[in-house]
Image 1 (cartoon, rainbow, N blue to C red):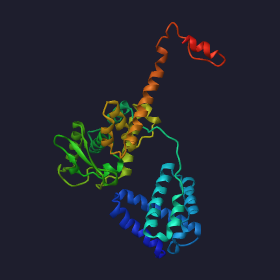
Image 2 (tube, rainbow, N blue to C red):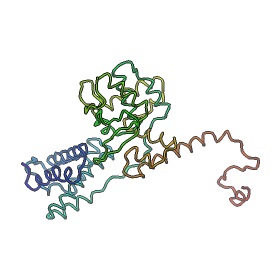
Image 3 (spheres, one colour):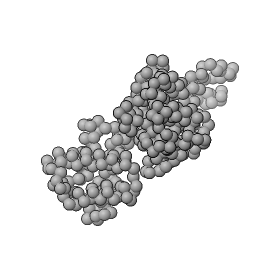
Image 4 (cartoon, rainbow, N blue to C red):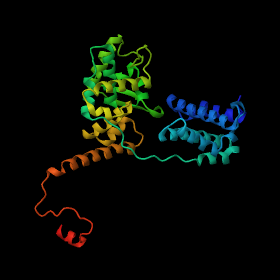
Length: 337
């Protein structure tokens, strides 16, 4: 067994702190578990010791920094993934500092390991025309086609995260007016999202193939083996349907489309349809309106590019002097405005 102090701390962290006290979702707990497994395996290799003799003192500031470098350069993790791993490590050492003050100084040194800044990137999203091409490429005369059509319509309608949609059961859908879906989001938070009639009709057609009653407490979406569809299954369906649509929509060849891309598309298209930002925040389950505000910036940038592309079509006024150029008398230029 691991050294009592480290083993007991890890066990208490997972069994009591994460689940009982913080109430984190199973998905988040598994992500934390994977981080601790990777960290312990890396420390064993670094210290040339079996995990059974590792102690808290082996998990130093330097060890954590080298572990993060290992994630980036050996495992080729992205900066967001690296930062999520570090957040899990920080969470464990904050817990340890409270439960065992002997390690307070040690824990503080770990908490000094900084997150890595990353360049701000505009989220990938789908244009409305691209969404239509994807749906037109689905053959809804087959059971798999009806399943994929229903899944993508629900994904586009709600902007759900992949883990949210795979956890849905049939009885989470309200099939009578007003049509809604009950979503279990991050941090055990629930939200209700409205559904379009077209989405509900697609779901009914798919469930009719399974002879499922609309009140059954069974998985909403199933894989070909008959078990609950996984997040990886959704990624596969999305990539396959996008690949089919590229034949009629070449712009999709330049897109890296994931289930989260549909989430961004939902948010942006709601904004462009003049839906209030607070409503979009509630729709997507964002904890802060600042997260939702990024779509305002994307929309404004799209409008700027559109205006710039038609700028040459607008004739200049008779008195226009153009822009200032280096070497020109700036006072004369200002006077001519």
